[in-house]
Each structure stands twice: as C-alpha cells, then as structure tokens.
Length: 161
Image 1 (spheres, rainbow, N blue to C red):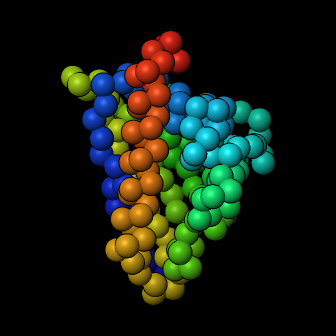
Image 2 (image 1 turned 180 degrees about the vertical axis):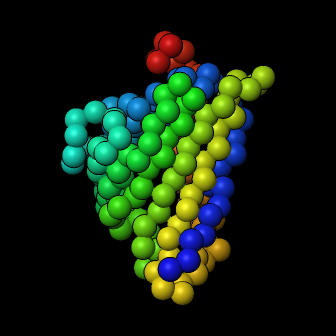
C-alpha cells in the first residue's frame, strides 16, 4: 500500500486563525450545517460528544451532493497552535483506489491574517494510484468550502470573535 501526500490547500486569509480553526476544526459540527448547508446537511458524533482526540464525527452531505457521508476520527489537536490531524475512516467520498486518508490542517498567524495549509495523506489500496482528476476535485471542494467559511466569518465578525 503506497501513500500519496499532497497539499489540498495553501490559502492566505484576512480572518484570524483562531476564528477559522474554531469554525473548521473545533465547532464544525455546529457551524457548517447551520452556516453552510450546501456543504453538510448534518454533522453528528458517532463516538464522543465533543471535538477531542478519539472522537468520530459523521458528516452527512446534502441530498444533491454526489456522496452521502464520511466518518472522521480526530487523531491530534493542538488548539494553541491551531493544528488538527484526523483520519477519514469510512464513507463514499473516495475513489475505489483509496483505503483511507489522513489530513493535517494548520492555521498559522500571518501578516495578512492567517495562512491555512491542508495536507492529505492518501493510503492507496495495493498498487493503486490516485487519478489526477480525483485529486483536483478534492482540492476544488476543500478550497470552495474554505472560501465559503471565510466569506461567512468576514460577513459576521461576531462569530467566534
């Protein structure tokens, strides 16, 4: 089984790192379905009841989405450094060539506000390879969601202030 590591996003945002981290990592189970229902119909805890190491969240996509759900397990959180590592352990969002994926999201304070870097480690089945089109779709989806979160937080400066 090979591992393909790639950067899904490396984005600079005027929004503070603490606000982005709260919206996208810690409180995404509340924030995303309410503020951005086009990306998630609901997010429910399958294991645990808060965003802590070991919890598992199931993200249920909207009916019109090409996928139904994914389950993510939180592997590591460093709230002081705005870092989250999690593993997608189940779902129908991956092509048949992917066994599972580990993601690392880092929100760094920058002169412009925040530099957000999202890295994926795709663990491939056997000798499978990731199609470039599947990788591009993943990058597009992550970047669209990030921009939507950013726009919502800019328009609502009191959220996670």
